[in-house]
Amino acid sequence: MRKRFAGRTDQVAAARRFVAGILSRRGSHADETARLLVTEAATNALLHSASGDDGGSFEVRCDVDHDRRLRVEVHDGGAPSGPRRRVHQLDALTGRGFELFDALASRWGHSGGARGRVVWFELDL
Image (cartoon, rainbow, N blue to C red; front, side, top):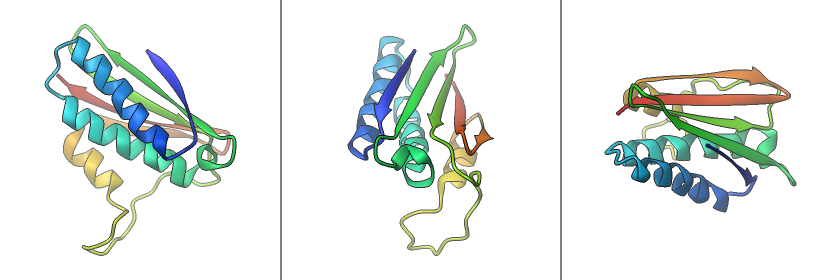
């Protein structure tokens, strides 16, 4: 399933509900982890790509395969540079995205460039 969202901060919660709704229909217990990771990916799309510009948007694609693996992709409007790890202070409000994906996702990655990027993660259900 896929859904496009306007490039506004209030749409991060809508993207979270979209993924949670798909998981609830499948009886998954990975709901909280998936919600946190889609929040991180969608927020990054707004902060670090053209998706957050006026008229921008992002798309969330979500699928659960036969092996009971959830895959979520967040497609954004692209940026001149790709995602990268950031050094942050312990009390910083941002900069922990890669750490969250490393700790919580079964697998994750990113690809793309200035014309569009995708950040994806998988959770074994």
